[in-house]
Image 1 (cartoon, rainbow, N blue to C red):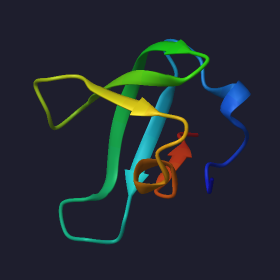
Image 2 (cartoon, rainbow, N blue to C red):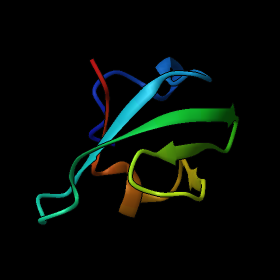
Image 3 (cartoon, helix red, strand yellow):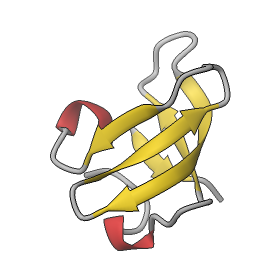
Length: 68
C-alpha cells in the first residue's frame, strides 16, 4: 500500500486523496464515511455516489494517500 501513514490512521470523517496520474484521476479528494476491519466507504468530491474500497484491493490502495 502506498498510502502515506497506515490503514490504522484512516478514520471516519478523515480525508484521502486518489492519484493515479491520469487526467481527471489526480488529486481527487474523498471523505471517509465509515471504516471497518475490511475496508472503508468514501465520498469522492467529484461523484454523487459513495464508493466501498476494500483494504485488500490493490487497484485502489496503490493510488491512495492520506490527505494533509
